[in-house]
Length: 84
Image (cartoon, rainbow, N blue to C red):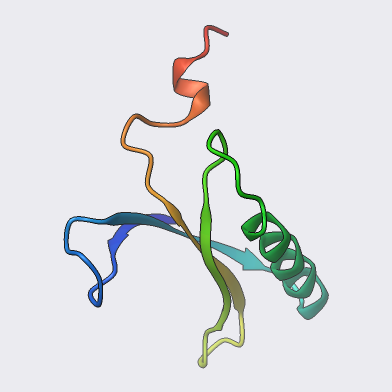
C-alpha cells in the first residue's frame, strides 16, 4: 500500500510517501529492511530520497510490514513520462 502523508512535527506543506510492504516471514522482513536501509543511503538529485524505514508488526496477526517514507514527487514517476 502507498499513502501520501505529512509529518505533523514539521511543516504542514511538506508531503511524503509512506509505502508499506507485507513480508511473509522474519527472513523476508529482515532482507527487505536491509535493502530499504541501503536505498536510504543513496543521495542523488535524480533518485527519490528515502527519508526513513522501519518495521511494523500487526499485534493481532504477527504479520510484519516494512514501511518506507520517501520524498513525494508531485509530477509522478518515471514510467508516467516514458513512451513505452
